[in-house]
Length: 175
Image 1: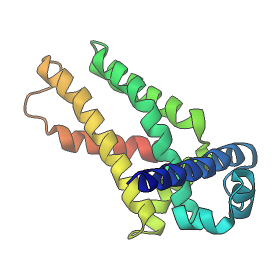
Image 2: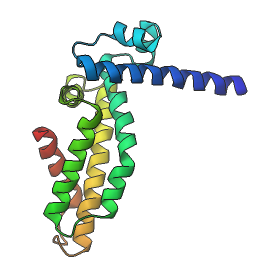
Image 3: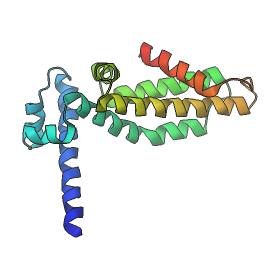
Image 4: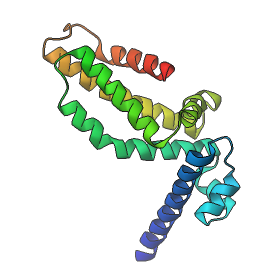
């Protein structure tokens, strides 16, 4: 049993090396200018290893986005626990936090690729990952909206999931 655990740790370590290398190269060279072979060389793995773990460059970028979103969750949760009294200020503040977090680690170029990958490969991994990220955002916005609805700042009859989806759609398009 321990060898299986060891193999899994080594696999995770190699995947992290690839993600770290891609993160550095995308930040310095840009997404489009970075080749898989460069990522592999920087990570000290074979290009086949990169393809084995991520299959495509957009999938690699999506995995990087997921990693950054996970790292950002504690900051988001803290904001959601201390929302401003005004719903507009709360929504604007949350959107500002999301934009700051998004561009803290990945460029706008990377986010354009992430957002478009969902449409360019509708049945692929990038689409599924993008859908999960959008679902997370919608759920967080529902929490924001529910807070204001329960506090009497939004009408009781509003459909919060639909409103959250509208906000996410508008802000994603604007971003």
